[in-house]
Length: 327
Image (cartoon, rainbow, N blue to C red; front, side, top):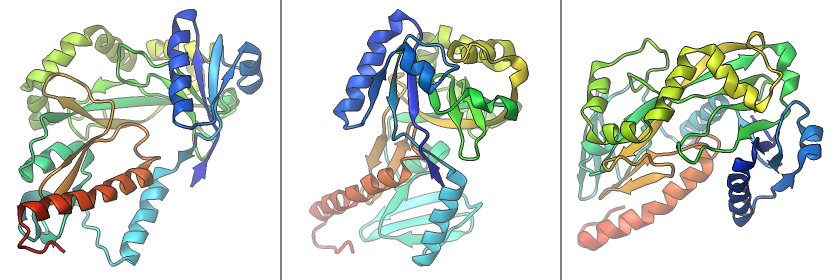
């Protein structure tokens, strides 16, 4: 379920050295056992990568998130919980001693509500009457997969230095649990919140983004980068240049298109793309409105952080209505 191939961050020109140093300082400040690599050590660890400097994190791991979610489902069932699949939330009411959720499959009641609805988290929060001052804007991330005979080109997780002018990680190489190697993603506006294919379109979702003033602030700020991402989506040759920046010998015949993901990106009313967690508390609810990478890998730790907030929500509610029990 989990493998720790390690993560390699690389600088490819001298202008990136300062950013690489910043990453190293942040990692060591957070207690990670990272170390710096020179050109000779880079060739030893990743022979096919071209870089002038790098940092290596040996504890970085990957998971098969489908297996993780299946394990979560088993644990929920063992604890007496219930999974309601293909169920739409239609109304939420917070009241003195709990929360009532009206769904397409009936009414649910509980003491607290934890909203982890991802691409629809802002809408669920709005149903609960919570003011988030943000909207989810979906960005599709497209990937290529190396053909089996070229998997040897990648031994770890290989990342470029992040572009400080664009709040996404950039194209990188990931060795998966099954040994396959994926390259990507780009970041293009999806025309549907669950728009995993280029042809997916939702008039409601598209109109909501187009009518959001903050989106146009964002578009103006990142116009150049946005155009580059769209070109990378439209042209395999352009996408290949991003891969070859990390591994020069990789060729178009070495990779084939594979799945895409959709990032639920929180865009604040002032046009700021959030690159950190946005967790908002209601009277009897907690709403996870932004969970950036690596949210899936870190889901257990994120869950612990959410649970740690529950007493604060309960205490705040008790202070407002001390005469009514909350549990």
